[in-house]
Image (cartoon, rainbow, N blue to C red):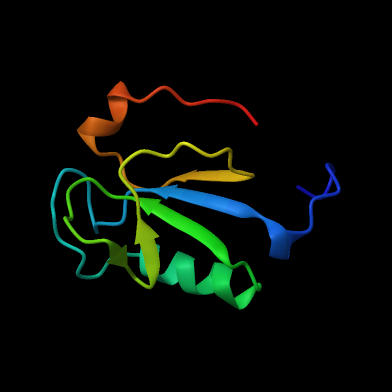
Length: 92
């Protein structure tokens, strides 16, 4: 981001997975919550999750989306859910 002159506070971040381990619909002890809080401490406001195993619109204070359709500055592949194997990742 720095090499591309992108301001950290203006970054759009998408995090894939939020559970504490892959293929398990349990948020207890998830390190993704810690990650989100750290990103918020940096002043980043545009953070979304893709967590298909949890049927909630919001997780850890950020929106849980079904289909990421926007372009993101950062994609974090946080939890290795089997369902993510079918996704096609794009470059920024």
